Length: 236
Image (cartoon, rainbow, N blue to C red; front, side, top):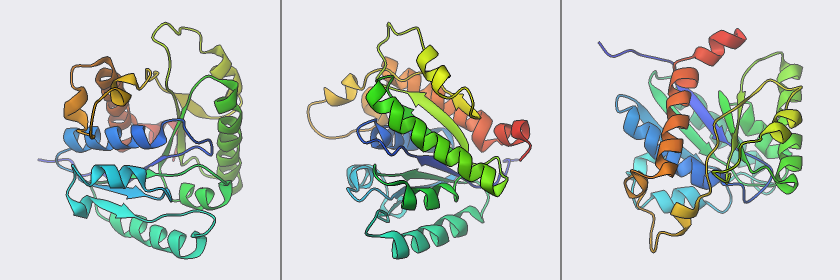
């Protein structure tokens, strides 16, 4: 008998650009799609640049992709459409939504955050990335406190990390007063950048360290987010 679980929405976000949100979203979507074959999966691209959805059109069925650009110029119609799509999709069990987002102001992004179960926040350990990342995380935490809820759970993913990096104290210090989970790191995306032409997805990185790191994160999302373990831990 196939186990039925509530639908889940996973948001990839950070107000800082260039931290790897779209890259991580694309690969993680494909990996979850592959591992959860009994689920229906949907990618929603809210980034005005529409990077992830445009790239994945080469590898995914069109019905699995929605483009709803949401930014300073799209707030009204975009947020309303997104709200309806997420709620209607998650009515059914065994549905997974991955939401990509752009960089920029917190306003419209925070409206999206309220609709999600978990936020994946990639960041390097550089001060340039960490400072706006901390601002973003604090804003989410304040929103949760205002509404008296434990969702969305916040998972910070250290990325573009050197394999020699062993000290993560700077990141731990940054989030020590917030209920966040720090995932195992993702190494530099060199394997992705060095591919000559075109995006071939998961099959193109199989056997690499990057694949192993993504799979480790995917397994954590399945066991703790999709199966509801974080909800049980935090008493949702």
